[in-house]
Length: 294
Length: 307
Image (cartoon, rainbow over all chains, first blue to last red; front, side):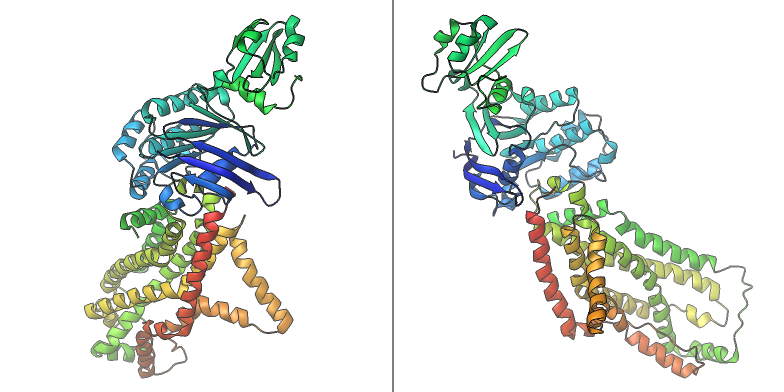
């Protein structure tokens, strides 16, 4: 099966400012859960908008084999997205929301949406404006989960939600939606929230992909050394990509795929070695080029 | 075009804009209520008719063709308040329809569904040009029956009784004429609605000002610079030309004879139909402009990226 998303040199410039997307190259295979992560303003949302055909861009981009610029309408039968929270209009009644999606979407299973909603406190005759932010997200998720789509795009889906809703959002998604055939692309800057969920990571910074890896491949590429202050100078000499100090302990992140970088055995001599978490890596790589500083 | 999809999109419009359904109903209720309140059923009603008027109604009671015409004109006139209310509601509907979805960012939800921009814009155009006018037509048809029932109860046995004779055939012809007017009006007003949709999809804020200011400024500019008013004439022809065709004036205050008043009424009745507008270049030029404008609106909605 071909790539679900295939991007080559995707560029996008907003008229007034710098490049929002500066030559994106990446592929997303089917059945993956990909985290597109980057700081605010890195180009996450612009990249998603390009994928969804919401914004014009230059370069080559295929989503499920279609160019989103020209084939958006048919593409949306197989692609779902939740853009941010609370984009459901306030005047829309819950039962009408179900009627609407049932009326326009050929792959919507109303019984499924009803079932998902029955596990919530949402009343059918309520208007979206009367629901809490968490409930609106539940409603949106219920609608989306009942659509048999191939690609689900989530843009900061839990922004502004409290912890309980955030956690149940991802749990529901993983347990009741994801089936290893569907593909999920999620952007967030709250990395901790999704790191146990992802199969792949794409880090984006200043409109460029700075890391494109499966989660499984990360241990063979990055190592984190945690050591005491005594060994700071020695560790620094080994060329870490990032370092930080927590409670008197020093953590160094090494990219061991680079030439001349230390091996795991060499690092073990200086302290405790493990695979950095995605959050650690995120911080490390987003501060890229600032080695040796705190 | 997928029929189930279009039906859903049209329902969607009425969910968002409840006024499209309610305004004609409320107007009809007000008309019926007015007829009811202006009537008392005690039977002791006094009519102060002068000789000329008595003569007129005496003539009417035996002259069925003129009776029918008068019947048609006063029932037809009931539609006027309905049309005015519907037009005001529709102007605001058209201006809001592509603006609100950007303002509340719900456009991101609508665009996450497999509905093309042409289908979306089309549903708004059909709502403004056909759904609401047809709804007004149905509501005013029922209201006319209610008002007639009230009036006939009131006027039975009075000198004005000829006015309260129900002419089924005339009533049916009148309803069909109104239906025909709705369809011709849809073509005539298509460029106006498309213009409002264009401002709605374009304006960053206040689509109302965007819609009103350019023509007003153009009119003023033309007046000042050339001392002419071609633009004003052009716009007022488009806005009110339809009603010039649909001339309902019955002017007989100048004491004209009952016979000439009858002729006046007869003429009005004949002019209720607007079918001959279909033969004017004006109408089809407007339709052509509307089609071009429609594609501009669709394109703007497709690529507008500020939600």
